[in-house]
Picture 1 (cartoon, rainbow, N blue to C red):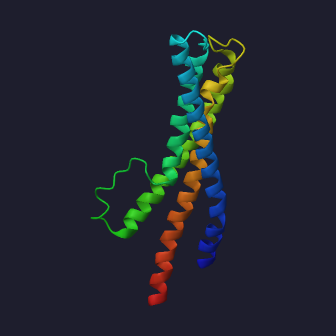
Picture 2 (cartoon, rainbow, N blue to C red; picture 1 turned 120 degrees about the vertical axis):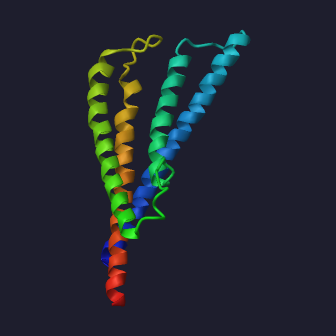
Length: 178
């Protein structure tokens, strides 16, 4: 079982790189959001600064990307909402089984987000257009859903592997002590 843990530790740089890429993307969106909003607000009060008509829709789109995709990073940091009030009263094995069960549920949800979100983005989203930018498809407005589903799938796969590894590591330690 130690080889499983060693193989899992070798995959950590991959998951770290994905996490860094997602966070970098969210930071870029935040900077774009701030710059566009600043330009739009200043454009309303200062005559020589343009106030583009597209600024509001693009800012909202950037905010949607940031909110949905950065929420997927909460999984990796173990910062998502969880009910753990009973964990200290339950046996450790039961808590581990519940963790794995919750991981499987989150993976199912992320697959649903990926599949249904992609269908919605390429279906309805590709047929509609932004009001202020008639050449830009609303595909980009709905695309964060499947993108977040993919991110959640990657991050939750790592968590599931760690929970399964922890389940067997304790079992191996108990067998060695006997």
